[in-house]
Image (cartoon, rainbow, N blue to C red; front, side, top):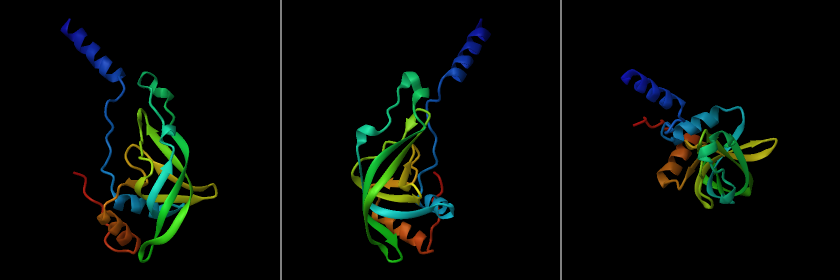
Length: 164
C-alpha cells in the first residue's frame, strides 16, 4: 500500500508542470559579449521604450500549452545610442518588441520606463527581444550599468559577474 501511494505521488510529480523557472542572473557583460559575437547588427540605446502593455501575453494556467512562444508588439524607442564617448547620439523611432515566453513564464517589460537596450537591426527593421530571464534589455538601469556598457563598448573591463 505504501509503495503504491509513493509511486502515485512520483507519477503526479512527473506529470505536473514545472513550478519554477531557473535563470542565470541577468548580466550586462554576458549580454554584451553575446550580441557582440552575433552575426546580426546590434546597437545599445539608453532611453525609454513605449508600447501598449495590454498587448503583453497572458498565460492561461489551465491551458499553458496555448501560450505563444513569442509575441510581437509595435513599440517606440526614444533616447541616445552608445558611441565612443558614451550615450550621446539621439535616437528615436519604431521598434518591434519581441516578448518571449518559456512555457508559462513570459517576459513582462514595463512600458515607458528607462531602459538600456541592445536593439537588433536587420532587413525587417529594428527589434528588441525580452524574455523571462531578461533578454536584451535592462530596465531602470543604474548609472554604473551605463558606465559598464560604455566600458564594454570601448574595449575596457567587461567582466561578467559571477552567479551567486
